[in-house]
Length: 191
Image (tube, rainbow, N blue to C red; front, side):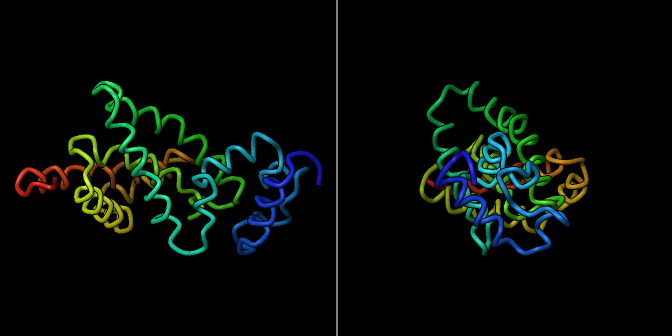
């Protein structure tokens, strides 16, 4: 193994441990195989798409990835309003290609290990509701509910090509969760 050192070894070993169906046929993880994330750009894209590796946790990766969305939501709320409203669009435009690259590297249409979509979609959940400990718990639960159940049109948005579909269904779940969270906060203070 040449190049990136300890991180390369950990990433490649983690990918090697994925179920065989997670990698394309005849593609074993190695630094010389770009589809495995072996080149620098591929490793960085996979690292970001998997939420800094959090998506590689073998159980409930979407839930763990969603937890990483909370710091993003908190940080976003520290910024001017115009930046808060631009953050979801920026995250979507950056996240869709990264999720597409991560999915191709893992050889699946929408692999569970790709959690950047959950992280970025959290920026939508808290657009209209201040982040407090109570709103964080309620917003997290609502987001996971809508992300898992994918009510219409979220399920249809999954069929958009590549990373666009990976991101769009989560953004719909974030909009559903954010809207319901706003209604709850309007009638029952979450502070």
